[in-house]
Length: 276
Image (tube, rainbow, N blue to C red):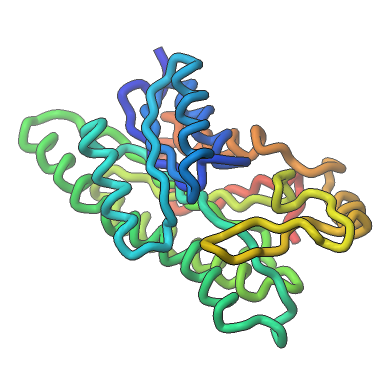
């Protein structure tokens, strides 16, 4: 028996990296996962991994920034598994420049994916959660503790040069978390943030001259970190190394487990001691 048996978890950006590990970890403890990724193939791959390990999952490919995505995402959860118990707003990427070179498109892209998309998903989930709570109370049944985990970054806590757009969006996540914790406490929902430090993913791989790119809705976005900068960053981390996606997923799991049922409106920094 897993601690999350019978719980339905929605995870964005779960086809790769940290999101994939979050989905695998929640599923390993019994959660039925709705796995989102921008691309169909990675989402399906994560679903098949979960099923191969004996878990239950369904894919929901698509961009979290599309106006109609949130309702579709929540509907898949309710139609397939009957409800919503855990939401992890993880999808995102970086698009860095010093502020004088940040275009309006770069600025809005970071706000859209890191702040507006989670807002829409949570707005879409509210009627589902509120309705489930009303039905439970009318039947004299206990209301289970549901979990929201929004992903931020140490850049949202302390800022980071070259990331005015990303840092602003991630700082906004903290405000949304605190506001929603106060709104949804009456539903027995905890709302928390995990702020990641330096985690080893395709976005932070060592790449000479930052030649690595990812494709986001037809845009070629440069990713990767110059090896010299990466070495300097590692020296700032008290534990002496970047975190792994598995370790990042562990921090999220803490706030999805029953042990955190009385923890809400908090920010957990998963950064090996790095706080910027």
